[in-house]
Image (cartoon, rainbow, N blue to C red; front, side, top):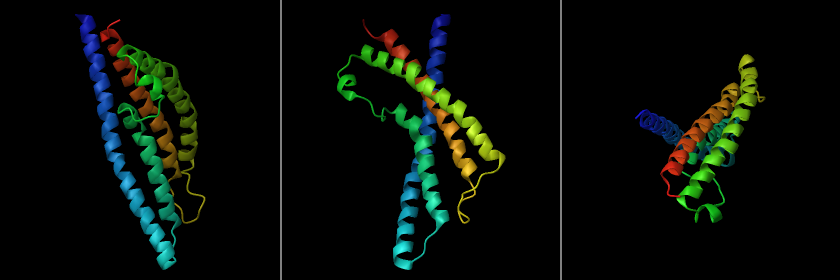
Length: 176
């Protein structure tokens, strides 16, 4: 009885992580459209009107960075990351679960932990001086951009936990 409650609780936790990843991913997906529109406007402004903007150019870079760092967990959740599908596609559900569990526990979670450990002081130093762009007319938000690195690590770690929970459940349910 208690074991079933733990399993249900873990599944609810994994579902919550998946919902968080999807919500953040859907929200930042709009940055792709914004980045394309701003980049298009920059190209037109530069080649038609002879006007350029470092601020807008950096805004495009920031938008791309935010998109990729914040939507990565959503992409992982939906199976959009690169893997060797030659072996994985034809594998049994049990083998897939083993690969997913091992990948989450041995690769993804240690990577996210090391990245978080290294990125937190990096972002904190940037916040301590409220780091700005090196360009005089650039964005004054380098500290905010660097903060996305530890946020990425946390989101990926959470999604790795969800993946591990689901893989463990699939292993339990899969026929031997």
